[in-house]
Image 1 (tube, rainbow, N blue to C red):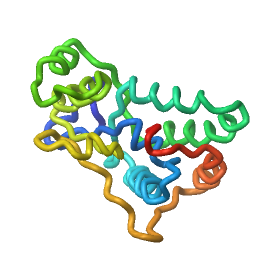
Image 2 (cartoon, one colour):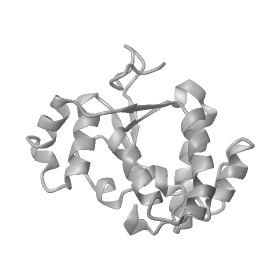
Image 3 (cartoon, rainbow, N blue to C red):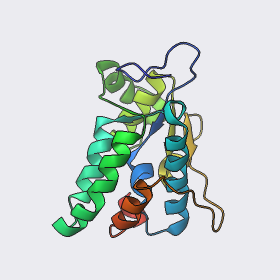
Image 4 (cartoon, rainbow, N blue to C red):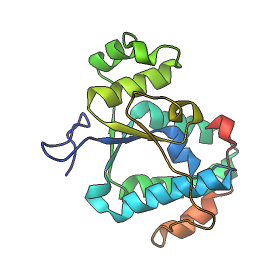
Length: 182
């Protein structure tokens, strides 16, 4: 069931599933275990159609772009067709922070010590009763917050995207990212 403009699901649809830039860019991780797990997460969501809907903050989308823009033009030209098609075909609600998110980010003791972008993201997730799927080692260690680390894929386990997206994905792998840059 679709979310409204603020990422809140209709009654009975369950909590909103948020993704962050570490998970999205994790599909291009130099660590093959992270890459396969992130890709499998998104391939399964895409296959689920509306039931696979996720929410991504505008800032997290921008963090992905900022990372990609650090690469040369030819790498961007090979990467962006995949990202463009996936963002079009996957059910993603892209939303901004609201005043309550900002207030919650800097007054919730459980968020103390995190970088501001992570505090804002988690405040948004908490405020909408959601759950954050992430490939971030720091966020994956948190307890007491709605964070779901994406499980490592078993050796050789990797779902494929439907064609032509899989072909675009393979081409986009000219861009790979070290985990520290996620």
